[in-house]
Figure 1 (spheres, rainbow, N blue to C red):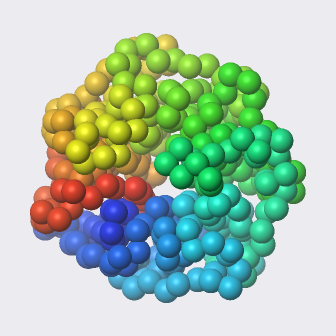
Figure 2 (cartoon, rainbow, N blue to C red):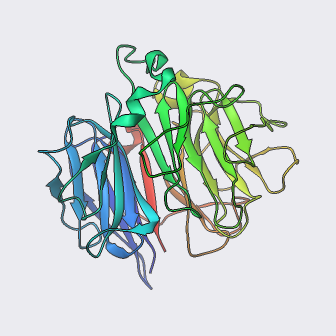
Length: 340
């Protein structure tokens, strides 16, 4: 059974597959979801970070949610949440990370009952230049990516300003490097590609094969260089799908919305825009992407036009057979998590 949780602008949408149809449930109305993560050790547990309403958790696959961390997490603006796929906590849950605006990073090893601030992150030299353009007086942790191979390696994207990393679970940090991405929205690692990093960024697409010591910018074929969504085929580290637009206005505003999806199936090949089964670019705000971690070639996508899926690694797409109320057509999608 496949389950999706999509974070729209004003609520969470939970989709559960069945033999007949997809069941849909709306929850956390008015909470402005920003990030969603399942716990791979306990798949009924998921977390959702919201802008203005803090962190939430579910223990029944998304039907009911409880607020957590209010007394420990300094800001109600929780912009990112991630669960370490390798590092077990003290109870039946894996270690979970939360990032906020203004930039602060927390971790919990007891399922969210208590939290530790990873303060060393804010001591990096680059921190004096971090600034989020729409709110230039602040910045935030846009994405947290625990490495799929090393339990103490964590990669953190600051929007905007740096893609940084720790190799000791937050005790010390390594700052951004020259020629690396500046405005990463989503970094990714892959089970079958040790040391490889992918970065979908506002300043282009980047890849590293040495844990971010050096970076390449393989962008042949792109006509749009403001990137946001990113998914890598769970069984093929060379197949990468991204969403892109000409700039932030076209990506995030309904009035200027025009975005599309690109795909590349082999390292060194040109990127190609894919459109079969997807809505036309005009009127489509930037798409959020996620791969099914347990099914090769299965990719999901959500935007203001609906939820879509591909079973051929992003070559062709179909819309999920679900109601899509008119109110969602004007809402930006911000997060998507898949439980295979």
